[in-house]
Length: 224
Image (cartoon, rainbow, N blue to C red):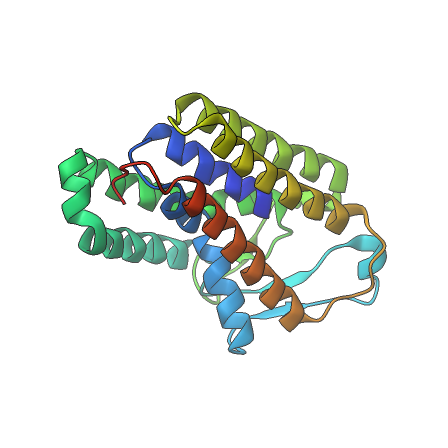
């Protein structure tokens, strides 16, 4: 649900415009960042079924990055890390406590969005029973949900942000391109990808999205 999570990051920026857009996207995508790194380290896993070209459904084993307990701990760690790293500037802009709370909530939102689309593979704690509504079994409905979240987040961001319209458009184009990749993943006829390739490409897309967002937002005197 990459483009949907980006929509949440945009919405978080709209809630507190003094926060940096890059920071909010990192918070929104933090669970996936950790997951892809753990996949590359061989700690968590992606299983690609033989019928992937038809079903487009992957199987995930992510007891740490995508358990509810792990998500809560990661939200706390990231919020505290931001508080220590950007606290001084945030206090000057009056966004310190708001920023801590917003980052933690944005990180945690990732789990609940995934709960809607994933098949039952999201545990409450490592080793626990998996949960998931499974909207991915209905690709059109899942894609509509993702796009709705992304569009709502971008509209809120565009209305609340004080960035020049050209920079807002740049962020919108970035989200639209990722949405196209999401649609291709849902309906395309690609062969089964390698798990490591999925992790590497996911990290690359996230890095480009965050980097572009940070570049577009660079001139604002944001909190952190």
